[in-house]
Length: 149
Image 1 (tube, one colour):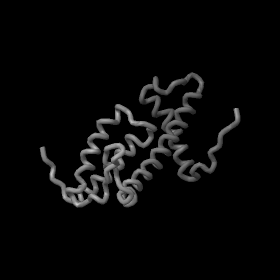
Image 2 (cartoon, rainbow, N blue to C red):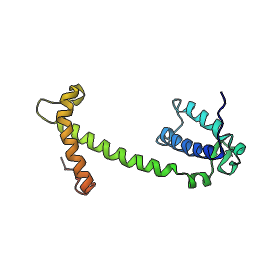
Image 3 (cartoon, helix red, strand yellow):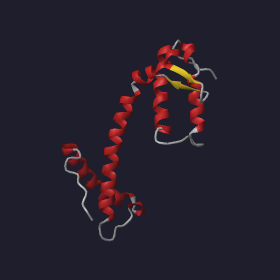
């Protein structure tokens, strides 16, 4: 199968590759076997940058014998803004869910929320999620504190 891309489409693909590489590998201190198949596809796609007259966006790291984005590509990509927006939203959503589930688990006789039916989960956790969402929307983390045990 052949895929035909314009220079603009390939340029957008480079942004997607940076974002994907960051999501898959950015939180890991070392290369892992799980990430290697993705790394190989990314390498293959980076290698054709000169074919699209975008060789200034990809360089060869001769020490590691692999392609990598240049500083120019990293500085010009629109992917970082999108990743920042995603991280922000994911942070708030995860904080809200975890706090609501913590509060339900602390209710007498409730315990682990993973053993609840979907109906019970929504009935107990849902209102707490709404409460926390409203609080964080209005005040961010301003009123969030940790107690000394």
